[in-house]
View 1 (cartoon, one colour):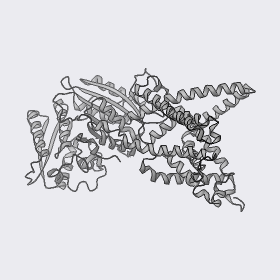
View 2 (cartoon, rainbow, N blue to C red; view 1 turned 90 degrees about the horizontal axis):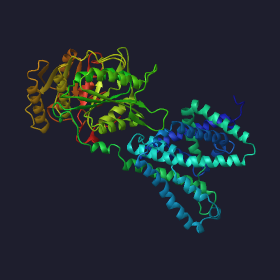
View 3 (tube, helix red, strand yellow; view 1 turned 120 degrees about the vertical axis):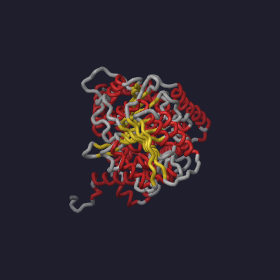
View 4 (cartoon, rainbow, N blue to C red; view 1 turned 90 degrees about the vertical axis):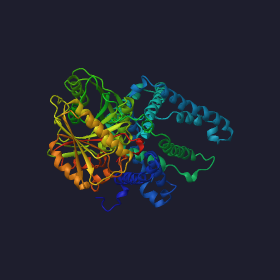
Length: 635
């Protein structure tokens, strides 16, 4: 192809090798430095310094072949275009609605973050002016840099918060609003100044207008079509080249060539120190861990049931509606239902959590509109049910922040989540990102959490109605522990509503004399209370099954499950904080060795397996543990 010549002497092969080398080194380096809570900016800069004259660039042969002055010309041009597109993309994704009603804290952070650094650096500069080099003493460079560095860039802050998964936390929202205020004000002033200079100094205003129009057209065309690909590929190259030009080995006081290196290293150092400090000092789940404990077991009889129902797609609406319909509601025991439609953050720089706004009738309703319409119809048909719809857009990695924040703010008692795996009878699909979000909610939720594994509760889309509940026969498998007691409290409410037939199956270990523990005493107390309250209820049945071990438990579950439409179990098992020693552990011995979904617990995982997949749906409930931080770790 190259007629016997060296491929790297041609522009395109050299360009591809340079980009590949930078991306490969960046990916490898980030695997190491991300454990230190470092952002990708630090990674790309360090890779550039590694390739620069301080390390690999000291080798003349390496520099002459890969990064000669001729070889970096195209690379620098393309990376600058990537930077422009990145800034343009962030501008498109920026929601200026944040500026309409900024909070007092955001305004305080904006003013303090801009004025305090400026008030400190400018006096220090003027005090040290006599000792500065000649090239700095007589210019306004340092003053201009002080002003620029005092105004943090909104795109940089948004990108850093995204790396830290803090976009939709309280800290993230305050920081983004604050720096958006300073950024908009500073860019408005700069734009006015640049426009004034351009108009006054241009020899031909028409020629200037043509240049600006052609540039805007190019950015719009390329930005709308190559946004994600172009930026993800070449923005790391730009940052790596910035580090490549940095040579810490030539830093000498008074040398003009060192200015760029000093500024670059200072930015890397500040980012490298501040990023892990934020991770160390700010815990977004801290407010949930300190929140008042809210569980179904501790709720008074006939109290208001506050439920936060989360949905990722329209298909999740119909099963949740049928479950809520079977849960029962009345004037004495109303249901306050908060519906949250969760979607991945796309096309925006700032996450969204807001009430759903009712739009006028349209021929093309959004998925959120269809979901809300289905729950509004359920509200009209059910008794004593109030629905409050919300929508959230956030990265999957931090989506649990919105769920936990809304549950905390609305004082929810139970969070309902759909299982990440769904089946239409012919094939099953799984979403790993949804699974990670569900596991994070289990870890940090300020209340109890339930995961619904739907295997045919209500087929169809969100337009399906709740008329004629498909849930008629419900069983609760009770082995003991806090999660099982929480499941019993929820199932007991379903029995009191009279819409379903409930069978409570208690498993007991043969020849077990008991250890007299606190959990065992509480188990006996709640079971006795359930039997007392439902003794005269023909639709509530209590049975006991005595088994030898976990194999006996599995045998009973296998033989009984086909008789029911829904199985309710406590999450309990595995590494969860609700696991108890003694009989309950022996009742599941050996069942967790091949666990596929530990977030469902031992019984839930067994029931969600292929053996039960087409027969019955499962509701797995976890009671809020005393210390939320000890719950199951997210995947």
